[in-house]
Amino acid sequence: MAASDAKYAYNFAVEELRDREYPQMQGKTYLDHGGTTLYAKSLVEAFSADMVSNLYGNPHSDCTPSKLAGHRIDEIRERALRFFNASPDEFDLVFVPNATAGVKLVADCFRDYAAASNTSFWYGYHRDAHTSLDR
Image (cartoon, rainbow, N blue to C red):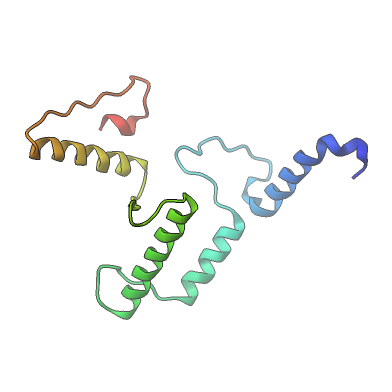
């Protein structure tokens, strides 16, 4: 790339990444990341290789595949906590299926705490908030 093209270097790098990691995006624009974000080709390949190489079971059962799943979940939890520089002695990480389930879990905890401590709990949200907040 010539020095005069330096201002285009960022766009070139982004386009190169897009071509390599997101071939499903050829000629398309995707704007629904809030609903479902795009998956990278390398992520799908790594995940697929892991799934066909290992037998994962229900992490709440007591068999070899289940223990493997539980170990993998613990490993991912610890890795995520380290990423955020959060000590596992002080913080925990809870996996939920989606944002709606996460918001519901937190709201239920507040509600249950208020009921157990005989206090009130009020929940307010902006009228333009995502629909997952009003359920």
